Image (cartoon, rainbow, N blue to C red; front, top):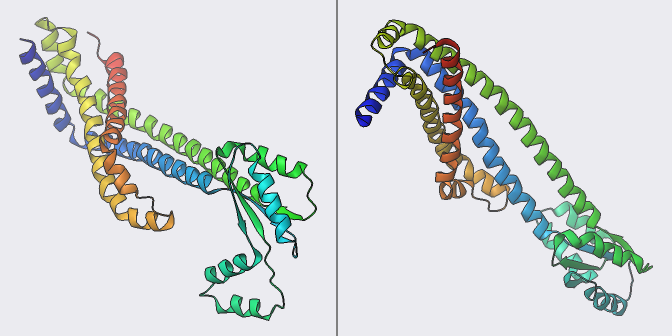
Amino acid sequence: MLKETSSRIIKSAVVSFWRNGWLSTATVLVMVLTLFVIGGLLLSSVLMNTILDSLEERIDVSVYFLPNTQEELIVGLKADFEKIPNVSAVSYVSQAEALERFRERHKNNPLILESLAELEENPLEASLNISAADTSKFQEIVTAIEVQEEPTIDKINFFENQRAIERLSKIMVATRTTGAAIAAILAFIAVLVAFNTVRLAIYTARDEINVMRLVGATAWHIRGPFLIEGVIDGGLAAVITAAIYIPTVWFLAPNIQNFLDGINMFQYLMGHLLEFFAILFASGVLLGILSSILAVRRYLKV
């Protein structure tokens, strides 16, 4: 009996969905747009977190020394820096090695190489590159170096790297806030459109509803099809959104991978497709059911 009742309610919901074809289509399209923004927020959040983690892993404290600083002094400071708490490694880059790396980095730029050749002395400075076991401890390491007040130290470049990370963090917050605001606006529009679709469906089926009331149909029999219609709207929107995202991310993935040093978004999406679709489906169904509940409570008295 329960199976037959559920089947009848679902069938009525499908009939109502097709009966209001244009409004149902508009509802699904607005929901697709909303879910697309939600999906974009999810993927962009993963992308930015990956970039931030990559930056934090690569960041180090580079201590540059004034020209003509004795190598023995730098090697001695290297041993001192290795004793600082939370320091995992300290590497020494001589002036000659720094010059060789610079030439290699700019080997395709003859203008820079010619300008470098005209200089009588090596303009680059020797440095110590310090890595930390915990990236959150870099500030403490820098403070420990500064306390030594070594006069041969020219500059410490950790602060420039830190500012880059802070800027990226601010961009992440701004992106999430903006995306959430857009998603909220679109969700409101989607609920409004779906609300009117269900309202029209109730009006269209008013004669059938009156007959069901007369024969003593339960509230679930009367309201059920309209609630299920909301589920259909949201579920269909989730399927369409996922179907759009898969080829879109596949197309964009090579460019993202080249630009962001090996981050394969398509591989990530396919590896987490079930979770990604579950979030889209749950969001779509939630929007659909919310719209239906509001419309049913407002326009369908049982």
